[in-house]
Length: 93
Ligand code: SF4
Image (cartoon, rainbow, N blue to C red; front, side, top):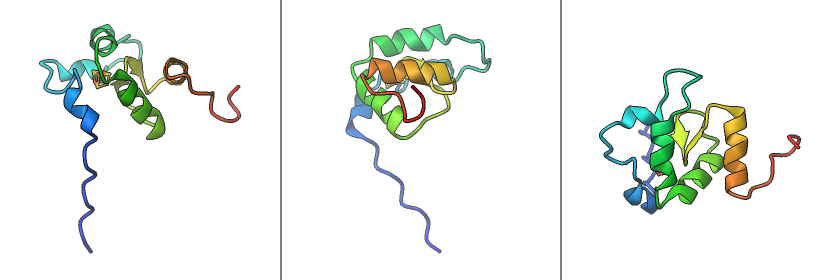
């Protein structure tokens, strides 16, 4: 059996404002009620926000903050799709 080949990191990640940030925990809120304001503020100013958000949608991320949205919350995932001008998933109108 061979080890899985690691996926190459997308080029846009080099410009991620969260990359190497002093508080990476901001992107992983411990409480379901934590609005993750600090991470959201950084994401809003991040120059790869759209790439990051699109990657989160396409890979169906459900953990942590991406592009300023909590991917573990259904409502926040819908808001992310609206931010990206993507239609609602089928059966979710
Ligand atoms: S938008 Fe936010 S989560 Fe995405 S790369 Fe930028 S800082 Fe990181």
